[in-house]
Image (cartoon, rainbow, N blue to C red; front, side, top):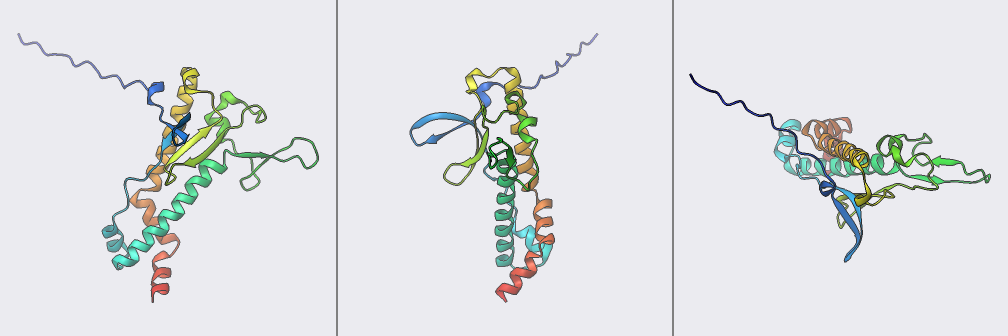
Amino acid sequence: MTTTKRRTPRLPRIYTKADVQTHSLHLYGGDQLPAINVKVHNWPDVNEIMAKFNCTEKVADKAIEWWFETAQETFWDDWCMAIKYEFDTPNGDDEIVPLRNGYPSKREYFYFPQYGRDYREHKIKVYSAGRSGGWLVVEGLTPIDTWDAIDLAHWRHFERSVKRDIEYATSLENVIDMIESNDWIEMINAIDG
């Protein structure tokens, strides 16, 4: 009679407060704010761009540069401006006016609903920090050490969404699509003659 060992299923590692990355806005300490490292590590391969568009290395490099500048601007517009609100009181009625295209954003309610809709009390700000803008910092949340499981789950959801957005934005499929849809190869060839 042989016995087989039953494999115990591995449980996923539990996300804890210690897993939340932080960033200080001051060189030597200061408040540690929840942050996400958004540096791009999987840069598109210039050889793949050259092969896809049948272009020179110089043209492919320039197209990748334009892609990165556009992707970076779009990323920060989507994650910062959609959450940031200004209080505009031209008539003294405390009307909240969104900054993005005249339409209210629901992102802040979706990711951080525990802060409610009263922006006079809780002003959540999302912005870029670090020497090269490699950190997405969220200001206005309660200190991490006071978070309960629900606060931590909301942060984890936000963090995963940001990372999925970066993963898609830096995918070769998206890079090629942006280069094609903007006709950058033709523009670069026209500029460089």
